[in-house]
Amino acid sequence: MGAGRAGRGGGADVTELELAGDLGTLLALERVDRDLFRGRNAYSGPRQTLYGGQVAAQCLMAAAATVEQDRMPHSFHGYFLRAGRSDLPVILEVDRDRDGRSFSARHVVAVQDGEVIFSMVTSFHADGGGGGGGGGDGDDGRVFDEAPRRVVPQPEATPRVGWNPLLDVRQVTPTDFLKGVFTDCVWARSATPLGDDPLVHRAALTYLSDIGTGFGQQDPALVGRGGPSIDHSLWFQEGIRADEWVLVDLRPVKARSARGCYQGSLRDRDGLLGATLYQEQLLLPGSMSEVIDEVLQKEAELAAREGREPRDWEEIQRARWEDPGGR
Image 1 (cartoon, rainbow, N blue to C red):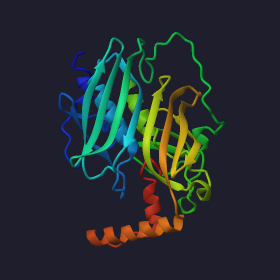
Image 2 (cartoon, one colour):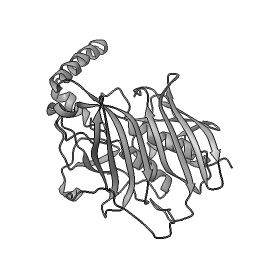
Image 3 (cartoon, rainbow, N blue to C red):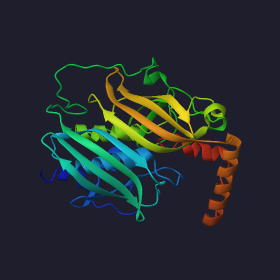
Image 4 (cartoon, rainbow, N blue to C red):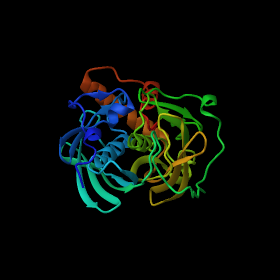
């Protein structure tokens, strides 16, 4: 195989504290060596950990930079191993597992401070189609789609929540952190145009796919309160654009042993299925009041180290909505 997408994998040098102001910039990686890349972070308010969708999307872009341009990612499976730090860039190391006649397999690890924070195995396929934007599937017209879908209001009739320079998010189901309730259905799109490269749109769908949680509307007393993600799998279906409205629809499947699995879909506003996902997350014991006490204690410790006054709970809760995951 050739050198791959050198233009897509290589951009301007990334400094340690440089922040991306839009989703396209976040997905543009610096190529440090043949199979070694460095990514930017994005503004996440006072949150000190990275949004998982960012790391997964950057891993996908790094892998894609090592395969031929006619091969598009069709699936990946990733494990969240450690919390990422928002004050350090992400280093992405790619192993070229295999290049066959029509498929390529890659293993990517995201590294910070010498430790792996995320590990991804992803596969690419020569679809054989053309077209711009989110397209490029080139199938024979036979489509079977029985993925669950719900009837929701259009994004224009849905309230906007939070503030993030990268995304426009409209919440279909509510979030109330004090009650342990989180959205499991949102309209979302890139806040800026992403161009017509289908790869960029698949990476952007990866970024969107980590919003919310499939257990967000369930009673925490029955399943536990939501914790960090454990693993995340995504299968790309039809080509849809991530700079136009995408419905992220999540549904719980099974919870036991402090773990919960949920499935989901990403569709455009016409119902075209762009991707399907499965995700597992920790479900933690304890009440939300205990969580609030813990958060306020950590805020007091952080404020003391930074020589400032600690924020109250309302300020912290507003800051959470500056993170694209909303949780």
